[in-house]
Image (cartoon, rainbow, N blue to C red; front, side, top):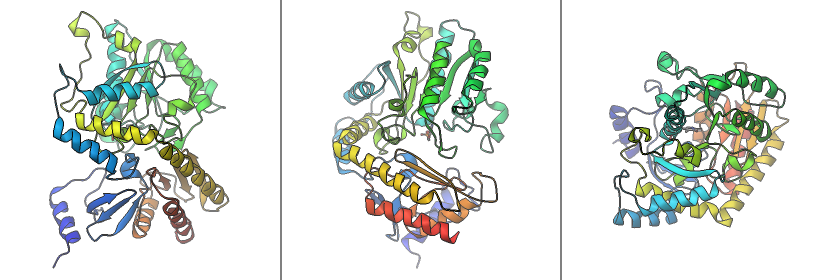
Length: 426
Ligand SMILES: *Cc1c(COP(=O)(O)O)cnc(C)c1O
């Protein structure tokens, strides 16, 4: 007799194609049957601590009763309605409440349904704003090693590599720059200056480049770079899809920066990780570049599920929880615990680098190979942690933690002890 676990694995393999997965060599995909708080449970009732918030989306833990209640009420009342020509309370209230928390210059919000689409909308806003004003600009600047999503526009502005190679010729041209540090900022400014007149926008992940390997840079040089771009009328697109909603220790990465972007992108934690939703906010100036008697100046974009009432409701509930004192204290608590762990790691001979930004922790393993996503370290580390009931997804030899804010001190200590054990054994 097959167990439920074996049965689900076999049936899944027959019909499902998984993301970022070489299906031929992938180890068994794990069927998850339920989740609660920081834990997910497989069909054998084995428990895993979700140390990566299920691909960086879960904020308050799985199946949160408060979000669930609000969602089920909404589901009985209004589950879906077209957002062109119509509107609804959850979308109005969410825009009002979120814009209130963002830098003051953000006044309008455009909904979509995931992170990549929030980026597409941002790029189309910037590019069409230039077009609507009969501008001749064509260039876009982005960071090396950036990640903004998997659709074609988002791929184009992301760092190029093995992932983008098959599509390389079809991606639009982008000028890639290093992230700013005190010692390269003048060089970056010089580069930007030579392209300033033709550049529409600069798109960046502020403070932490997530998929690029949890690479971190400081707020001061980034603010300086933002200011320099603004003075040259280069629009700033700030991708807060990963870092937003408390991950950096503050509500948004924007709260660490002295300059405000023109356009901002949100998804992932926006709904507390409950449902997919994308949001692109912008300034009144951007909005006004489309605001006209002329129908051809409208923003040509929309998705079937634009501003899903359910997703907006989940986002409102998540926001309630996020603003609670208890959650804010938890964010601080996780930040402090990472900090002490990093001190403990800093002298370890196998640790190349250990770093954090708020609740985001990352550690690079010293290996003979150069650091890469395809490093064999992943294949050693991923099952090592799974066996111990911890879900982590090393990026090559970089392991990281992006826990939900409800994670207990005990579970964090257990994860740290597993990391120390791995450092001994691997
Ligand atoms: C995940 C991510 C995206 C893409 O979001 P999806 O919902 O996966 O399409 C874009 N930007 C950043 C910084 C991300 O981490």
